[in-house]
Image 1: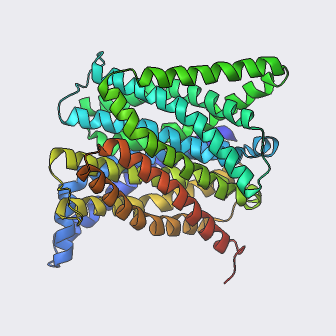
Image 2 (image 1 turned 60 degrees about the vertical axis):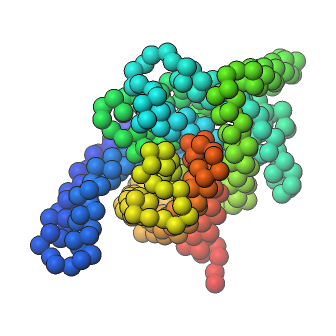
Length: 446
């Protein structure tokens, strides 16, 4: 059954790529024979930005497969969610944190590659080492902070939860495990995509976010299994806990005694990522508050990482493109969107209209193939598409103003835009997805 599911997903992915590209190409050729100004404008727009749309679409479809795997894992984590109360509060924040830290890492690499500071070869350089150090330090600090915030959210809202030490151990161990995987993947994707002539702004951020989604949940499961073993010896458990806290403190000390560039990135990123962690845990609180609905509809548990991950990837593509445009001078840092910014908005809208029905179909189909009772083909696709079309216009406005204002105030958008925008996306997408789902399933009646 699992093998059949994987093969079906891969076949769907391959056919979707071929179909969508043919669909996009065909209308363009028809539009050329019409006199409508709109049709001519769209034809010219597509001809000019065809490569960006295709690169973004391929990246998002690949991400969808990774997010689906994460969704399937989460859909089968009901035992862990029931055994370790409060875990669902931590999960969205942990997933978002990985995407924020390594998405910003890839965005900085992309900008440095675009402006020629970094070469696309795997060579030791100050820029690369500074970014690796920063990413590792931020992972440790944010993992600890995330655990504390998750416990506080549980206390404030009266959720049943595990102890603070258990939250910290799960968060720190999962952060370390996933970082050891994500660091080389981020560098490989960023450098090789640029080396092969692809625009990293369209490729790296969504792919890295998908890998973050994919590896975070298994890392959390590994952390839970380690915690379960440590519970057999409380002395060993407390020794491991103290050791991890010492490592975090040592990382903070090292970071603030490193180069000026390292300190600058840490100082700019840390407050932003703290805010993002709170937003991520808040999203987890929303899901935890609706846990009965989610556990009774595993398709929604499968759709949750898919919708959140793809939404974050779409928003990250916009953030990375605006950031590179501001750095290179193609986009002016003014508070009214001009031509190039509007073109980027249109690219994002096209990607959203295509990708949201696809991930709804994937969530429903995977539930069917795994023998899980789903919501139904039509309901799942409607929930995904309706939620996405409500979310994306809101996020385009937010991303535009965050990137423009941060650049105008002398901050590097690479350190701010993606973390802030994806975290806001996680929170708003949670509210919208749960709200639309409750309406469609009849849990809310007007």
